[in-house]
Each structure stands twice: as C-alpha cells, then as structure tokens.
Amino acid sequence: MDCIKNRRTIRKYKETEVEASLLNELLEEAFRASTMGNMQLYSVVVTRSTEMKKKLAPAHFNQPMVMNAPIILTFCADFNRFSKWCRSRKAEPGYDNFLSFMNAVSDTLLVTQNFCTLAEDRGLGICYLGTTIYNSEQIIDVLHLPELVVPIATITVGYPDECPVQPDRLPLEGILHEESYHDYSEEDIDRIYTFKESLPENQNFIKINQKETLAQIFTDIRYKKEDNENISECLMMVLKRQGFDKKG
Amino acid sequence: MDCIKNRRTIRKYKETEVEASLLNELLEEAFRASTMGNMQLYSVVVTRSTEMKKKLAPAHFNQPMVMNAPIILTFCADFNRFSKWCRSRKAEPGYDNFLSFMNAVSDTLLVTQNFCTLAEDRGLGICYLGTTIYNSEQIIDVLHLPELVVPIATITVGYPDECPVQPDRLPLEGILHEESYHDYSEEDIDRIYTFKESLPENQNFIKINQKETLAQIFTDIRYKKEDNENISECLMMVLKRQGFDKKG
Image (cartoon, rainbow over all chains, first blue to last red; front, side, top):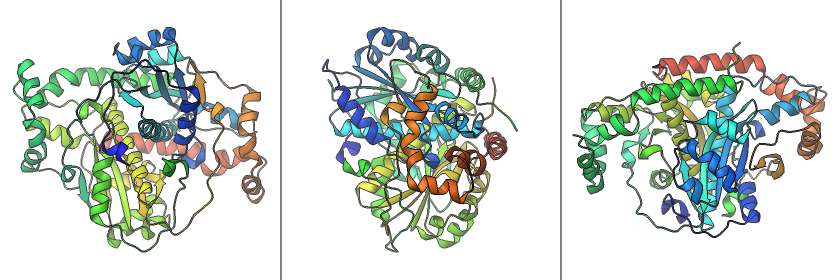
C-alpha cells in the first residue's frame, strides 16, 4: 500500500480527461467504506463543465485547482434521500437534528478518503479543498442542494503534472496515547514541534511574514480567531437552513 | 486495491496479538492523509488492557467486539495540542469554536479511514463503532480527554476470525449527481431501494420485528427520532464542555 505512504497532494494537473467509467468504478469501490447502519448518508456531485467550475470557484477562494482540474467532486452529507425513502414507505424519519448531521458527516468523510486512496492508487492526483465548509452556503446554491444535504468535502481530481516534496508530519509519539490521554507538558510540545519549526521553508515563512514564531503564522494570518468565529456562525446558520437544527 | 473492494466489517477476532510495531507503522502511514493546513488536528488513544476495555465497553453499549478485539483505537478531534503549541510560541489560538471543531473532525475521519484501509491491506479486520459520538461524555471521562479534544471514531482491530457476506450497497446512480443535485422523485426512490428491499435478510427483519416496511425498522427501532434528538442535545453539551462553543 505504498500509494498512501508516498502520497502528496497534487495541485497541478495534465489536460488528460478522467474517463467517466474510471470515475464511476472508483466511486463504487469507495462506497464500500463503513457506513452507519448501512444507510449510506452521502451524495457526490461531479463537476466537469467549465460553466459550473466558474460558479464553484469563488466558494473555494478562486484556488486555481478548481478551474484547472478535469473533475471536481463535492462530497455531501445527505439525509434527504434516506428521509424521502422513509416517507414513501410509511415511516416517519427523525433525522433533522445535529446527531444525524454528524452521522452523515462521518459516512461522507470515510467515503471521501476511500475515494482519494483509490484514485491515487490508479495514478490520479487529488487535492482536498478545506474551503468547503467555509462557504457552504454558496456551494448549496450553486449545486442546488436541498434540505438535509450539506457539502462537507471537495476534491479536485486529475492526472498529476507535478511531484511536490512530501510535507512534514509530527512524530508518532506526539499523536499516540497509550491507554489514556497524556496531556502535553511544555517539554513535550518543544520536542514534538522541533522538527517542524526547524524546516528551512518554515523559517522562511516566518521571515517573509515578519513574524516571531511559526505559530503566529497560523493564529495571525492563516486561521484567525475572528474569521473562525464568524464562519462558525455561518456554519450554524447553514445547519439551520438545511434543516439539521431540530431539538427535542 | 482489492482490499477496499472486497472488504467486510469484522466483529470476531482471533486471539493473536497485534504487534505494537505493526500498529505504529500503520498509524504513521495513515497520518499521510490530507490535513487542514498541516495542523494534524487529531490524537489516537490505544486501548489494549482488559481494565480499560471494561471501562470503555458500556459507552459502546457493551458490543462484544470491545472486550474481544486485541486493540481498540479511539480517534479524537484534537485542537488541544495545537493550541498549547501556539501559547508556548507567543501566539494566541482562536480554535475554541464550531468551525475549528468541524475542521478537526475532518482531519480525524480522513486519518481513521486511511488507518482502516492500511490495516485491512495487512490482513487485519476492523469494525467501526458508530456509538462514539452517542456516548462521548463517558468516553471523555474514561480516557481523560482534556478541553478541545472530542472522541469521534472508535475502531476495533484484530486478525479476522470470520468472513461474513458483504452487505448490499445502493446503486451508483442513487448517489451520484452530474453537475448539480437532482432531487429524488418517488420513482427514483423506488428504483434505488428495490434491491435492498428485496433481500431475504431484510424481508426477514421486517417479519421478526412485526413491521410493515424496512424503513420502519430504522425509524421505529434502530434510529428513532426521540433518541436522535436527545443525543443531539448531549452532543451539543459535550462541545460546550470541551470548549468548542465560543462565539464571536
């Protein structure tokens, strides 16, 4: 399974098309992932047309991959299909709540990752766009997502036209906990983050952004408190709009 | 990549131990999954001891896999480590909000699915316990999870001692949408669910539960509206308790 070990995110793609038959095969295999009670609480919207890519691009902050990749896949948490099935079968669905949303999110992300692994194994490259939940309202409008459907993950897919270096990862001991969670001491944090902080590219980030530490790049530039709080509000509104806010 | 296509959930395991070196190798490879801004917003708690399994079992409704599997892995959304790093580097973290929780959930589930694929490829069997977010408060107490850490997925792991039949999946056309979401008509629902409803085991479920339709098994017995709403409230309380409820 070297495709996982050696993987890197691909942001530049060849113009070669991805055959519909290959895409369908990969998706069908991906749907073998574990799913809550075999409900398969997801839908996948495939974007190939330039027109739709243009509409989606702003939701992804116009990252160039959206226009340049042959395929964009939007993986959505979906309790609409299942609820419709219930209603047409004399059963009253009760899935318009936060727990059901989270169950659908789980199903969706497991399938997303399965798809990525399968695609990479077949020589495709993918980029995971973390922007999906940032601008979910726009995506809902563009893709016409009905109630009980929320976009969770977007993947750009195509044949790689670059081979970037693999990014660093924290040492295993920084993530693994034996039997119970061992909270991090100041020394633990120093040890776990030493390698990341020592990398020339990270040193350079600090310099060009005129910051004192790498962490400040995250808190002051990339993932700011104020932005996070504003988007949290928007995301809560989206759950309400899509009907996942029912209380007991 | 036949291990994904041919996979089945394994609930019965041989007594053979899973070597720590193998587990570590699989986890390290799994951590190659895409992660938001390379923040790696997860922790994994490994349970091997009988004592800890006993404590975890009730949170998973005493499903026998928890006691019988050699290893239980609890994958947690974790913004604690990252926030600690920020604080010790003169940076003020702003990740105690719902968006940050969802970002950590994404990171966590991508890694979880990567781990499952890698484990299955090496001959191990896994079972995904959907109960984790149902009783997250209990799990938080048992595993001593601090603020900004929430258990999201639990996997039991071991060498398979069974080979169950593969469960059905909906046809691809029921899940895939070209260019935009095409909502389901009554006829679509009939077509998509025909195969599932025709299966002898599902027919039998209806009979032994004295129900009229398969959907009623879900709405009236397995995933009830009232339970979903109560657990939604609990889950919201857990986000508050773990400090992910900060508003702007």
